[in-house]
Amino acid sequence: QVQLVESGGGLVQAGGSLRLSCAASGRTGAMGWFRQAPGKEREFVSAITNSGATTYYADSVKGRFTISGDNAKNTVFLQMNSLKPGDTAVYYCAARWSSRLSTAYYASRTQYDYWGQGTQVTVSL
Image 1 (tube, rainbow, N blue to C red):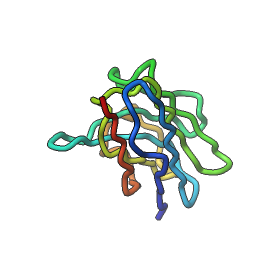
Image 2 (cartoon, rainbow, N blue to C red):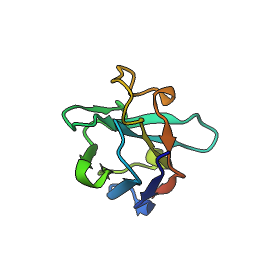
Image 3 (tube, rainbow, N blue to C red):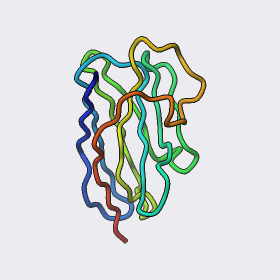
Image 4 (cartoon, one colour):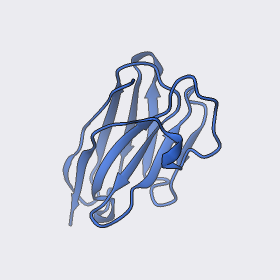
């Protein structure tokens, strides 16, 4: 069992930036970020393969967010720039079991085995 701990959330004004971190207690496969706003379903934000060779982004954040990872430290980051009020949500880190085969469905919640507790991101006007 792998534990994930997110950090870096907070309150920021529109146009500002935040950098989220997710530290895993052990090795993982691909890792990703999801977010959930009040009254809405949890939605995909971004993902990165274990090798870091491929990244994925939701259309809503493409060009503003950047995902990266430090495989040696079992850590993934989400650099969020040009934040909008619509980005306000609880952001969850997710990871796949290291021994799982690769998937073509990185945007699907069902493809992840481990989840963090979430970190609140609030973007004010």
